[in-house]
Image (tube, rainbow, N blue to C red; front, side, top):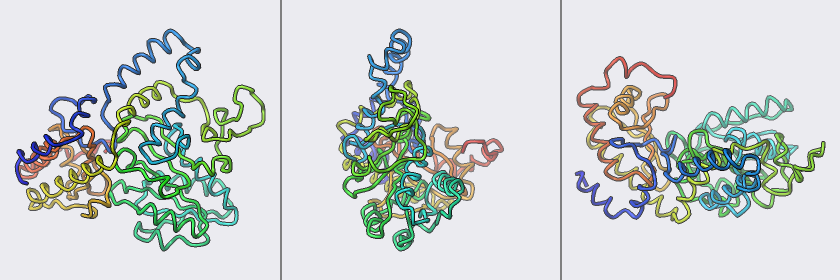
Length: 411
């Protein structure tokens, strides 16, 4: 399969081709950064306009009841539960992914008072490690973060571990942990299991209930297309919802918030993982964005994602390996997420040259170009055309310009 016609043939057979029309895609742009910020769903525009013009503009504070603002974080949570394989009423949308991690991590360590180790791996997103470090410093009682290589996680789960906290899909290599094996080992050793689904939700089939995970967190602005900075989600298994207590609590998590009692009494549900008032305009955009997922077969979507990652890598290596391009991560496509990192000593400049030609990916230190494939709106023609532009930039050394070599604040 070596021509653009082959890519177009795949597009003609694509069961998700009709979904592409539900998103705004800038003309002439090949957007391969859905793993950092998903594109704008058309439905979100109308929903936010209604929220501004009618709900805020006309109905004002009555909208908390009239338009369901108060319950919307849990309504959205159930839509996400469908995507991540969680039970109904076990997911709520609130705050940021780091804040939610602090909640579940603090709740988890409190359940294991005689154990002092939080286990994670070096492939985890650094912010997760920062949150764990901050919690240990704040507690100041002997808790520590133990970081091992991703391949060493299973062997590192020992009787002194209170919590295993790892990201299912590595943000650089796209390597996926075996969720079932890691969760089972954690439980066998008496530890609790927290999964970060930032690069999994909306990209790979969800398995939280299947693997009996304890808690999970994830963001909604990547493959779920909730918008820049859209609220994150937090999952707590129903068997734990009335037991775990986060260190960060607030009135939205109270059993009777409008009683305005001075003592905190936690809701006996996933609602206790909420803190303060939620951003309703962002919630409205996210709610509309998630409607596109109602009829999505996640296994079929993941099959397309694997094919796109494989073809992109094969085509890039066939045409660009002579310029020093190499793959970072495994070639076992069924153990990966939905993005590909290519390495080159001039990756930053090359990515800037790609962006200038409207092929949008991102750069990750020290030397990686990252391309995320969102099967709902990316086509196989996008894959072919992106490689074609990459080849031209490398062949002509178009990347070797001062404006491409100078690093910007956001990479």
